[in-house]
Image (cartoon, rainbow, N blue to C red; front, side, top):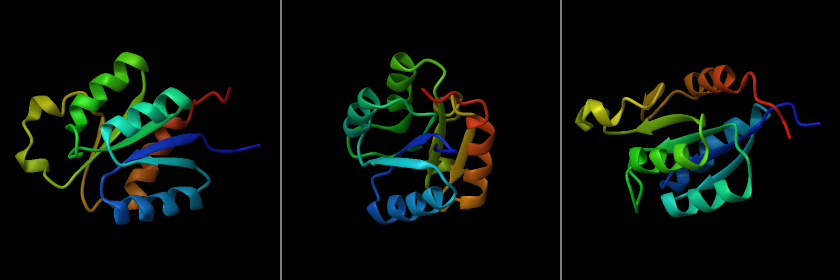
Length: 124
């Protein structure tokens, strides 16, 4: 039996995505990756995730736009936002996110957030 739930990591920087995926999988999480909003939307149709770790700047849309789409199709989905441009983002675009980490984010902090938001995840 898997002890930690599946996570979707949406990051357009392949190197950053691979590094974070290795760290999360090392902690027991199942991690799928997507490099665009479109690819993330397709993956969300195929599997139920406990959380999405989302880059704000994607090639085809902004992270808050994708978060709105995710919330429409997956009410209650918990999303962690990663960005390298935190000071430049309007505050109202960040209101929907409980966890926001400026890049480069400390993996320990992301893991702490995941532990909190996936604590009550129910496996199908």
